[in-house]
Length: 269
Picture 1 (cartoon, rainbow, N blue to C red):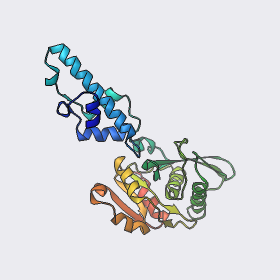
Picture 2: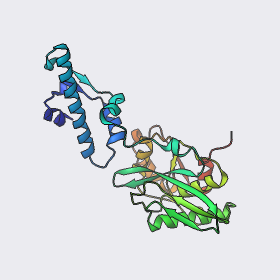
Picture 3: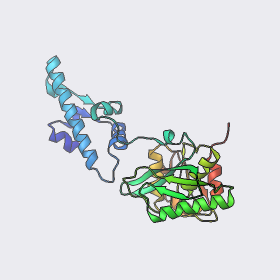
Picture 4: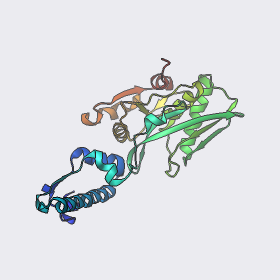
């Protein structure tokens, strides 16, 4: 920030961009592994601040050196345009058949929405969203368990979709989120919007450990999630998460899909 202010001829004492504003800027406009986008957007704010100082100086005749500008988080959309990233889990999970998973990408931990739908057919499974073979296998394992042990019908074709199709996605850790989305669809019951999950699932419904626990919990916290479901065998990784990072999040350790469904599916009121 000091660099961008100097580049635009502004003394740090004349422009205040509070920490809450910077946090909102990162969350809504510059969510990436590096700081290039953040630097670019701070530069844009510096230009806006310089313009405000010039306009005020012209309007009231006060010397430019005496003008001070403060940029609050509430002004960011006005100054930078609409947010590029949004907390969308509440909107996404209002309907049955959508579960919130957690993944690790090149930009760190990310939310992963799993959508499931059924059409009349012969029990065929289709998985879309630029997913890799391992994730396809996870979807098949989750569907097989539901059909074998959870009275899930086989007279319909099942479509599992992972949005953000331009981003390649693979790995087994979406297994329990896929199982939850399928169960939610089948029973017509939405998934809790304050809960996200990650874990591999076996044909017998066991939940196996995964990697990237810290990054995934951070992604959940950033998105306003209050409950995170993790494999019981990742308990050691949970203990390694700094207390400040885990603050406000309840971690639920599970070893079977039935526990996941009990936690995740909303109950009739």
